[in-house]
Amino acid sequence: MATPGHIFVKPELVAEIGVKQLQREIVLPGLVWTNPLTNFGGSKNDTITVRVPAITTAHRRDLRSDDRTVIASELIEHSFGVTLDKHIYQALKFTDEQRTLDIRDYTSQVLMPQVSAVAYELEDYIAELIEGAPYEETILIDPSDTVPAFITADQRMGENFVPTDSRTLVVGSAVAAALAKDKQFRHADWSGDQANTALREAHVGRLAGMNVIKSLAIAPDKAYLWHRTAFILAYRTPVVPEGAKAGASFSANGIALRWLADYDYSQLGDRTLLDVFTGRKVVTEVDGSFVRAVELQLTATGISIVQGAAVSLATTTGTKQLKVRDDNGTDVTARCTFSSATTAKATVSSGGKVTGVASGTSVITASYVPPQGGSAKTATTTVTVP
Image (tube, rainbow, N blue to C red):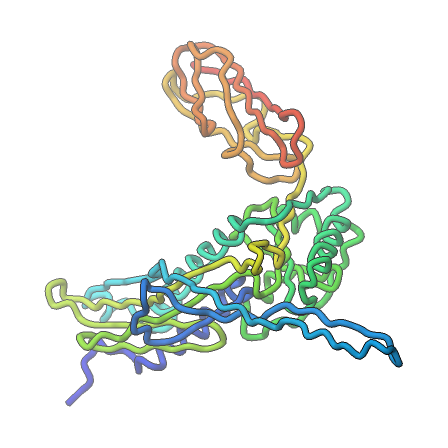
């Protein structure tokens, strides 16, 4: 009997291809502590236990001393309960006509776009954890002299005896640009993880013995130095249900995925799903402190309205969305407050959207308090309403 036309390739192969492609596309999830497992069968309160290596210290004693006491250090491998709280998935439906006439290569036309979608979602998921972690302090980066801030961050890690191996410095796009303009920063060739194209392409150089990785998932003017064990990303693939026409799970090198496919007779088309259960956690020490990562922030000295000093609306009740950037090029529109000098002519929303009211002009002011504090920086534009 011929194989049904709707089962395109061997399920186990599809799942394996998906995992390998995902490894090539992710950056942040590949830099944290992962704990993958296929065929998750359930756990109390959807919580699993993940073990993270301990940080310990050594001692010294004088030779030929009368004191022969040896102090035993504690080496406790920490266990953390990580709750699987998100189901990250990408589902597609396509008709018989699409399958017959349009889809020539299932891997490139269906599986790869699904993997890319899951990769972006995982990237954002771990970025949210990194940006929201309880950092002990935020170190400010001077755009004109960037290196000292990163040396200080490295010093903070050393003060807390965080191992130098498996440390990574991840920077936003504006910080990466500031580094590239700094003559003290020397780009170095780095082969990286040959299996991870995204990680290799995100690498922008080395600084203080650390790989510098650019990520678009974090704020452009932020940077984070962390040890791999600072953050946990746990994966569990759901079981392949009995009712699935085709399906498989695959796990490798910290990544796990499940793939399912079947035929929907009510819609005369195929359905395919790529998914994983996942959870995340910040790793704190026994005393509750968070020392395995450091946050850095690029400072700013001014802002400007992208549209310029004058803006004209197309109609009397027309609208225009203003965009504000700081002098590092970071979009800070969402961090600004806006006001209109003449609300009878034009108003402006909290998000910077200008709306015409009556013919005339009004000066719109954007105000922004920079990361280093101090007085607010302002920029203005004159709006003309026809």
